[in-house]
Length: 162
View 1 (cartoon, rainbow, N blue to C red):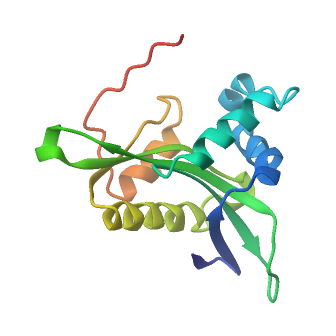
View 2: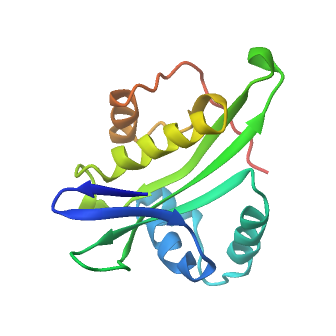
């Protein structure tokens, strides 16, 4: 999917294994992410990539910023989208959005909105009744971004680190 953003073109495509270093750079590009990611050993990331790639219920997507006439550009965004069946809501499916990142130089330029628009459309196409996500309580800018796009903080998320 291709979108016009700012003065360039933004393309979403399925991630490929050679994209891992750029994806990890995006995941680690803030205080919280930097404390969670350790790229000294890529083995666990490669195993996770293989598991995601092998399961059609999961998509790992990257975004490239293309200049005029370019067919390949730098990776500037990523997210994971999973599709989950459920019994509640009359047996409806939901999509779970995870690990949304946009390069800090492009925030506020329409890249995130284009990505979320694609996520919503793909979720509808697959018959989902809702898109859900969690975002760290400290990420107030992210909260405002998602609320502006129509998401509601309707639940309190909880996690247990294992």
